[in-house]
Length: 208
Image (cartoon, rainbow, N blue to C red; front, side, top):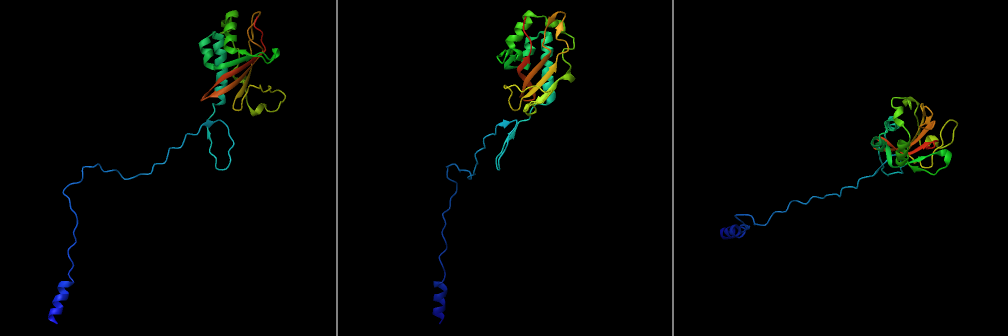
């Protein structure tokens, strides 16, 4: 019985486990843990007005204030009475047009028209005169001119959704016998960031 007990005791003992060991890490560079990176979404182009469907996303660009439209009109008048072509260029769009509605819809380049008017007429005589009163400038949104209404201007075909139309009565269209303006000025203004620029000028005026 004693031999059986000894045998069981020695036979049941298991051999010790063996593990590989090292004194230093391998020279190879350790790679960082993997991180999932989602691609950056493409930026959404901003628009002034839009209609959305379910699940769609639209970035709206803030339009310039109506006060900025009036400011553009007054800056135009100031540039003309100073005969300042450089200042005029800051308020006229790159391809701004000038139209005499009484002569049809064929337009001219506004910059060239005003250069010729500065050459032939003396707008400097109007310096300090009340050519246009700021409080008299009327501002209409695109939709305001959708249907013709009494007392409102007709919407020019060149006007786009998001543009505004400004109308101003000229208080001093003449200096002595010389007519320098039409009785009324019409402007199609287009928003550029926080300001407006004139893209079309309408005026019943014939350059002498």
